[in-house]
Image 1 (spheres, rainbow, N blue to C red):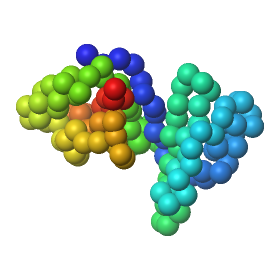
Image 2: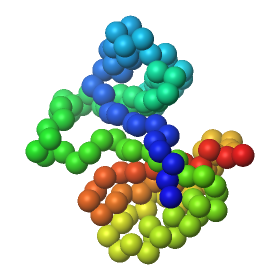
Image 3: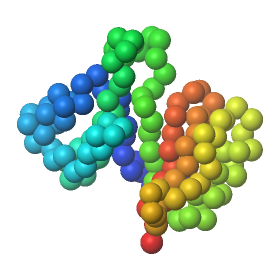
Image 4: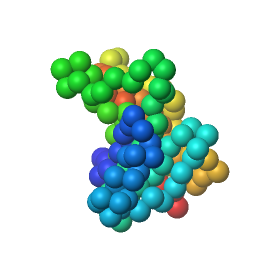
Length: 131
């Protein structure tokens, strides 16, 4: 019922250094930045990543594949608002899933999204791009 990846969010130790790597080394473009969070969006024209600055206190820990579960979140796109609502109902009926928030507008819309953790603890987002 999903239609591929909308974006992948990654928590990074140094936002500026990560953005510079993607733009200067890989040739991606920085397509958005929000210093209040802080976060940045980078894209190669097909794939889009949102990079989130982690807090520096206490000292950030690097990824440990034996101790950490997944990434910041994985966003999947759905084809309609009705499908988003149907997926919400299915997830709500799953006893081991934890809904962070039900479908709601992203900013001023028309996009809608929801966040939840699947039973294994991975944080996921479903996005209907609107229209």
